[in-house]
Amino acid sequence: MAQTAKNTKPVFYAAAVFIAVGALPLPYGYYQLLRLVAFIVFGWAALIAYEQKTYFWPYVLGFGALLFNPLFKITMPKEFWMLADPAAGGLLAYWAWMRMKD
Image (cartoon, rainbow, N blue to C red):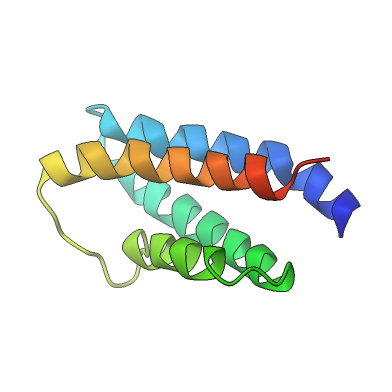
């Protein structure tokens, strides 16, 4: 498990940056792709956290997957997403850093 975690760390960092950049005014297509990427990565992170037998992070990361899910969109004002995107990206990066230490 440690080797897998080490190999996937750059993926989570790249996704965190991709999500945080969503606070900028970008074309609508970017936000559609952001929802898909964030949904997949947060779901994957929740699964890893569950497999690592943590009891707090699977719920937090699972909530992130639900928040960004592309099927049942949660519509909020742009101001909400301007705060939520960098916060979610930072949360994902923090989790990757804390849980996947060598």
